[in-house]
Image 1 (cartoon, one colour):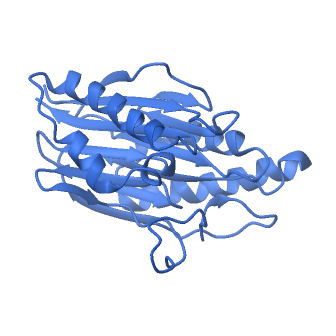
Image 2 (cartoon, rainbow, N blue to C red; image 1 turned 90 degrees about the vertical axis):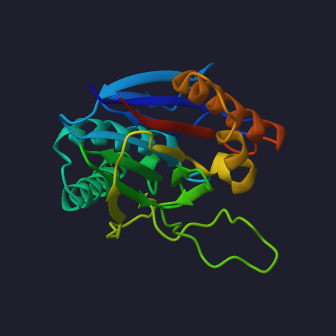
Image 3 (cartoon, one colour; image 1 turned 60 degrees about the horizontal axis):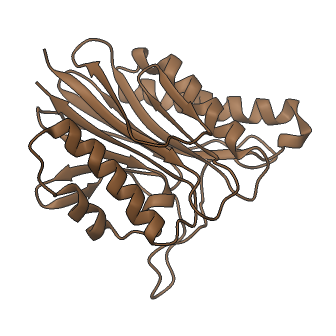
Length: 253
């Protein structure tokens, strides 16, 4: 029976005092906490849709960890019903409203927000989605193919990254309508995906990420667990300036 293997971890990095990132894989959530080692989870392919996503709570705003946890928990609950692009858009709009409603009920959480990026795996296709600058990639023989769209202003000459985002779930004092990036593509056995917060992609260039993911290993699942650790290590060696959350997803038979 075909199945989905997910290797994931989340870490505060070297600078932040606590972790504001959260992660969801199927019904399993990891909310604003730290994993000492990559966690590997297996899910069937071909039954209910399987959702995997990362959410990065906004730094500099109150309650980033609350916003990211709220979003991944709602996505975990909605995941089995996300069979189309429209379903995914509706779920993200509902998450956006939920973040604003939670902030409105608790003044200390005013303007809390989060980014999100993820995939929904169906029997023969994958739906990719994001709001903000967390990313989703397809891992190919030629490197990384970015599937998400950064909600960021144009980069200044000579800059590779920016901490500014133009769209998030929540993140302001009044309800703002979001326009999620949602797309579909075919899915096949052996396909691999990387989902991550910008705590990985800001300090580590895509070429280096691709080189880590290209390292051979006899056992695919052990390879992904090892690669997850090596990706985290690369971000730490580059200074670990932000929370680091990532999930490697592989379709097996």
